[in-house]
Image (cartoon, rainbow, N blue to C red; front, side, top):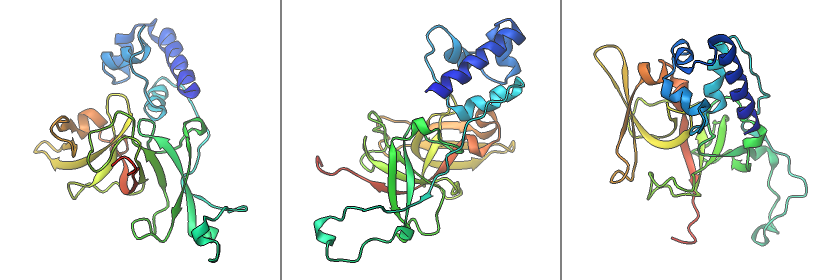
Amino acid sequence: MKLIDSALRILEQAIRKDFNGNLKEAATHLDLSYHTLYSWLGPRRSRTPSLRVLEPVLEKLGVQFTTPDLESGREVCFVNARVVPAGEQAAPPRAEDYMAAPLVGEVGAGPGYIPEEDIKSWFLVFKNQPAVRYRRNLIAVEIGPHSTSMQPVLSPGDIVLVDRDDRNVKDPGHMMLVLDPKDGSGKVKRVAVTDTPDGDCRITYYSDNAATNPPEVYSLRDDFLDDWERCIVGRVVWAWSDVTSK
């Protein structure tokens, strides 16, 4: 969170300098709602935006805020890898058959760089698994402790593998890692897209646990500024589930 705190301080200073601290004027200039900006910088600071949301806001104020990138899908090098008893008599695994995907929380997952401080661990991925083959820009995402909207398929603590190069939503129903337009946080939903007569796209996020999670409907133009990267991070292609309590 240190990078986000620094970015928010810079934003606050820029608004104080350019708008005498007037959040309403700043929100209009930045194409943000007053409620959104107030939730970031108001006394309660009830929402924390992601860096990918803050960067274009700072750019509009003439502020450059850069952070080091961290590539996903790193190559693997095994060093004295421990082999489980069942495989002790078999040939050891070949490092070139695996890659390491950064493991992040659901809320902090997104496109572009992943700050080092947001990475919980690394997940080994077998390259030749059919769902993974030929995919390289992968991240592993842990479903949040209160994220029950995709049950029974996904439960809190499950880990999904997301291909950030696959944003194809032409076929409805694919499970995708999507972004909340209010604060840029990530969440896993199924997605359907419909073209509207006025040239916009209606985007529907819907849950498997629909009884308690109604569909969320957004406008590509009004909610995501006609930018698919602000909406879709990538497709969920694999999942690991803890079945010890199921």
